[in-house]
Length: 187
Image 1 (cartoon, rainbow, N blue to C red):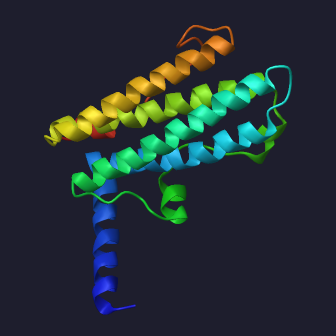
Image 2: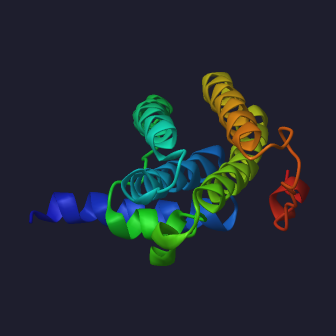
Image 3: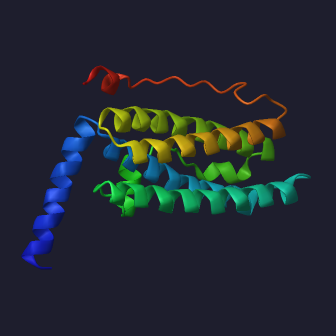
């Protein structure tokens, strides 16, 4: 590799470290992109392994979630690039930045537990979206804030529909507790 490429990459690593220690809208949105990448994997796991009387219906639901998630991921990466930010682009970065947990045991769970896990994952994703919206507003990045707000609304719709499958209201049994309020105190 050329020295110029190495210099650009080292500058990227240095900036990412700075942005993640005092979160920026771009860094927080990078976490969202990583979460979405992990959600894609989990959605496929459920699509492939869901069993029971609702399997046929749920397979279509997860195909739709996969298609929507992939489009959202690409759109959000474009927003980052439009804002002169770098979305995560390696498996290592996705793994370091995600807060979505994965578990090979999920494939053996009941359909209901798979759906419940998805609703909880989207709730976790919303925590990062909410933080990123606040940061984008503080940093005067209205296009980014608008894209993130739209994503939040789409997640809310998906959560409501998943919860309905479980016989619950939109937020029943889902607790949004933000343990990381540090960035709210920084101005």
